[in-house]
Length: 131
Image 1 (tube, rainbow, N blue to C red):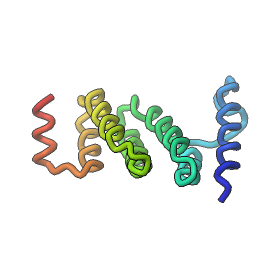
Image 2 (tube, rainbow, N blue to C red):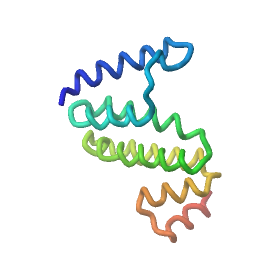
Image 3 (tube, helix red, strand yellow):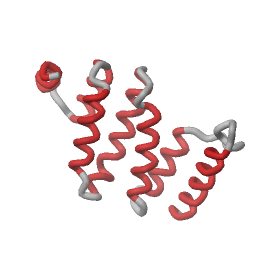
């Protein structure tokens, strides 16, 4: 109920994580904590929520496994309504397009993105033939 405080503590923990050789500076939190922070501040600080989701998305994209694909799609799913609220629908479309282009050699990931975008099987096959 106090998004400014949530961001203050999140920023403090992130700063400690960057300054630590172990990567956590004594804090033991993961993606679920960052996800909770983004959800808590999305209404009042949408840009900051997008930063947190983008950071999580960037962390899972290089990994080529089903869990990473699901996590990436979950982050994109959460980013979309925030971007819509900020009138940045074009940015979301470009983001997904860029991800599809960069990771087009991951058919399972493309299937997950198809579901995210509500594409039909026919639409998916047509777009994959173009690449």
